[in-house]
Length: 315
Image (cartoon, rainbow, N blue to C red; front, top):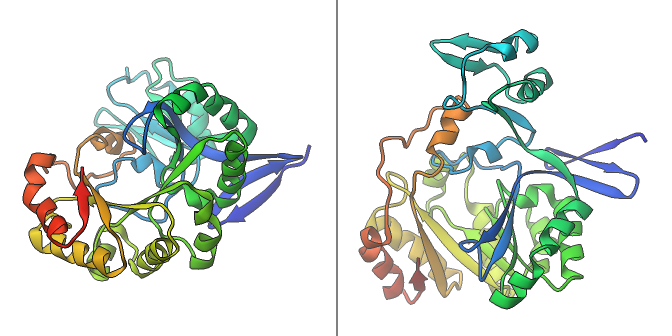
């Protein structure tokens, strides 16, 4: 059957007959940090931001891509033979010229040690719903549900909207982790569908926000303000990042911003190094490789500033 390719916010998804497919790079069961209770977290490909500390750099590109794990490679060079000049070898490293090139992606199927792996695959909504429903009893027992993450799940909006409505037919609690960087009219349409908005707030200063993410924050703040004013269940979350927003001056700026738009609670997410190895796999430079992880005990004074501004602030 002929595939009709549609493009929405630069992302390609497919419709074939009555089915819809989106690009997902992981479905993680028994998550306990992505909303209340036991949850299944669905990670979508594609993000409009380019946060220099991103813990999921494989999520940024909207396309399916191939990555290389140096720890598994035996340097047999079989991939180079079949890559049509898309893969080379230098200084004991495999160099992938274009991680989204189909010839390079195909090489993952012939790698004898799985050093080359594919990030992202098309999944139909019916398949995702079936996976989610396997653990419905755990959601009901724990007050959990499903969290849509990424990347930025709302980039794949047509798919996410249909998926959310189908899951709600099964009375499943739906949360979304979002950057908030989405057209305002679109946000107003989609946001009320979710039971919980886990809304990132990265900086109060638009120019500094741009320096760390390559987007300004006016649209993000507008959407967050609308969500709060319209009584949606929204939790602002601040990733506390060294050299970006970790000072007490930054804490005061963010706390004042949240207070001004009516937020009464916020969650702090201390910087970690869980994504460091992924940059090597993508052959990307990681600008935070020499920074130490932060822990709640490091941020007690940071937290106090939010509390002094009347915001219930927790980790």
